[in-house]
Image 1 (cartoon, rainbow, N blue to C red):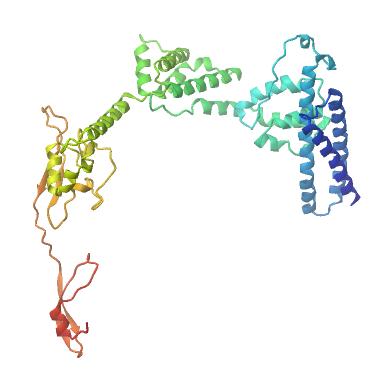
Image 2 (image 1 turned 60 degrees about the vertical axis):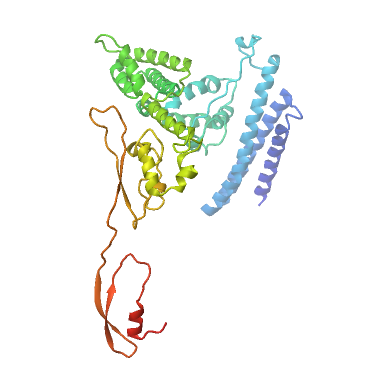
Length: 461
C-alpha cells in the first residue's frame, strides 16, 4: 500500500499550493511566485497521475477500479481549479505590470488597458457552437504562449453539461489538448444540426396575444439573430423574404397586424427588411406612449366594463343609498327572498352577483348559490316547500334602444310530491303475519313508523 501513501503525500502538496492561491487576497503573490507555483503543481500532478495508474493496475476487480477513480476525482478537481486560478492571477499581474511579461505583441505597448475577455460557457447548443469556437480560437487556441495543457485546462473550464462530460476522462497534458478539441469539433461542428437548430428557433415563436412592446421586441430580436446566423452559414436567406414576412406577420397581435396592413401601399410584395423597419418604429411608438404592455382594444373594453360595474356597486346601495354593496344592506337582508327578487327586477340587477349594468349571461362572477349550487345569488334562493324561482334572461329586442334587459318571474308551483307505496307482510311479536303499507322514499335519510303500527305489531319502544 506504499503507492497509496505516496498518492496522499502528493495530494497534500497540491492542497498546500491551493491554500496559498486561496489566500492571495490577504497575502498577494508575485508574478515570479505564480510561475513557480505553476511549475510545482504541474510536477506534483504528473507524479500523482503516475502513482494513481500504478494503483489502478494492481486492482483485480472492476469495483476496486471504480473506488480508486472516485478517490482520484477530487484530487484532479483540486489541481484543475487551483491551476485555473493561478493562470488568472498570472494574467492580471501581467496586465498590471506590462514590462514583466515575457511575450508581448506590438499592440500591448499601448497604454490603453483593454477589458478582460470572459469566455462564455458552452453547454452543447448547436446554434452556440460557431460563436464559442471563434472566440475560443481568438483568445486561447491561437495563443502561442500557452502550452497544450494550459489550453486544455481553459477548455475544460468553459464547458458545461454534455460537452464537459465528453472530454472529462481526458487527462490534462500537452499532448491531449488536440484530441479533446477534435472530439468537440467532430460532435458540434455539424452544419446540418446547426442549421436545423437555428431554423427551429426562427420558426418556433408563438403568436402574440396582446399588443406589447416587450413581446414584439423579443420576436424581432429572435428573427434578426437567426437570419444573421443563417447568413454566416451561407444559407440563401436573401431569397426567403416572402416566407419570413408571411410567417412573422401571422405571429403579430391584431392591432400590430392592422397597422402593418395600413402601411402597405400598392401591390408590391414587402421585404423582410420592410417588416423589421416597421416593427422597430412601432415598438418605439409604443414605448414613447407608455404602452409597454398594452392590452388589445377588446380586452381593454372588457376591463372597463367590469370596473364600471364594480364602482357603481360600491358607490351607493339601491335601497338605502348607503356606501355599501346591496347584499350587505341591512334592509335588503331583512326582506324575504321573493321581495329581494322583486328589488333585483325593479333595479335591473344581475341575477347572479346583484350588480347593475349587465345580466347573468355576461356575468364574470363564478359564484353559485350556496344552497342549491345553481347560478343565482344565495340571497335569492327560495325553498322548494314555498315558491320555486324561475329565471329567464331575454335577448335585446331587434329594434329596442335598451341593450340589456333582464326578466325574472316568480312562479307558484304545486309542491305536492307523490311517492310509491307497497303492501307487505310483517311478522308481529306473536309470530303472526300482519299486512302493513310502507311508503318508499329513496331520498329519505331516516325511517319512521306510525303509533298504530307499533301497537298492531306489539313492538317494544
